[in-house]
Image 1 (cartoon, rainbow, N blue to C red):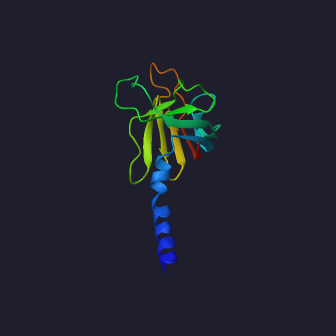
Image 2: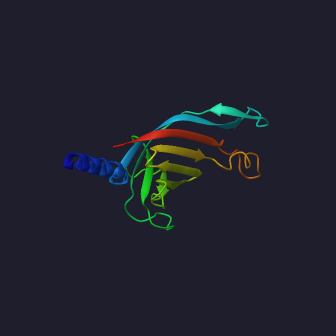
Image 3: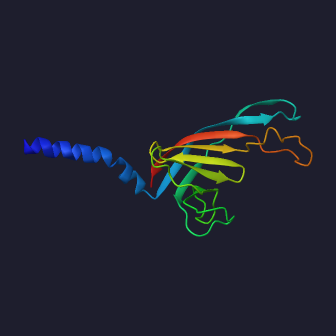
Length: 153
């Protein structure tokens, strides 16, 4: 009887410790699996779907002051292989306790990551289509959407 109770207790503790085990991780390697978007033809008149190259990213805890002074830095995203100081995005919001996600601000989009599902989404050039031929813009970047998965490192 004690053995059954002990095994049951261990199973309950093991299943509820998923949050604690995940939250102790301090960095992840994320690898893009698919990237799509839209780009203009050579004349800039017609837009069409395009496959874009995927990337590799490292998410780690941020330290120091926010370079833009917009708030507390919790996490940062950089391209895999780039130095620690080369930051692609800052996450000014920590992980949601229930859902497990956070949003990081890119210069021209968002990087979203969930440390429980280990998935990410990178959205860039969100205004690329609407501002493409606006006066003074000189051709904007094409909007893209990249998705992928991550592993603790």
